Length: 273
Image 1 (cartoon, rainbow, N blue to C red):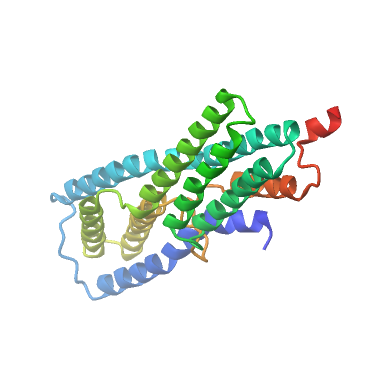
Image 2 (cartoon, rainbow, N blue to C red):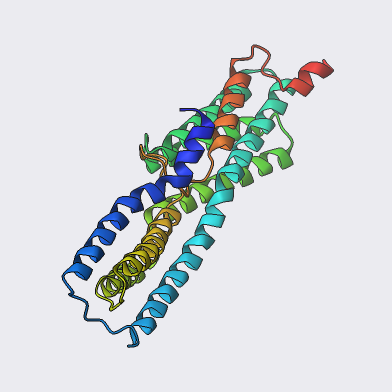
């Protein structure tokens, strides 16, 4: 499957999941109309229930969207911090060719690979944290060869990397207001049940209204669940609200290229001789 097809499938994934449920509800509505089982008065307080459910869904959507917007920039920020650490080792390698800075560059490259595998849940969080802490040995080895501000910058990027890993772990393992989800799901079920038994003269109109309202509400509930964890790349099926990990993949490939290069130099250093 190419990238465009994958994006198209992700775009309509929730709709494909919702469609069979809505089709079943429409059939149920036709059966209820034929059997004349409607008992919910259309002029009752039913509209208040619908408004209350929409309010709760809006509250959940606003909360999860804030976390999603934060999660959307975390992979690129994480990749930037990792590559910034690699830059400092590359500068030291160019000035002091030796085993110590080369080993540090290799450690940063392995960290990029570890972070990518961690995002797909191929390795556990403690293993990535050990890789970040393991950079301390290489920082100590660099101190005699580098200017103090370079080592300080490395330590700052190391701290930022650790902080972002912890934040991603919190976002993907913490569900936003669990009690709110329960209320929204119960409210949505109540609204759909009300539409199934709502007194409408035309069976076709009743089925149409039931289908539209059910599709919108169920779609919104599923979308909120997807937004709540934008880092579920470890799942095999597509999701509508996954953040892009291209920055992590790109920095991993670049750092592997630097490590494999015999001169271990950036293109600018190589061009400048």
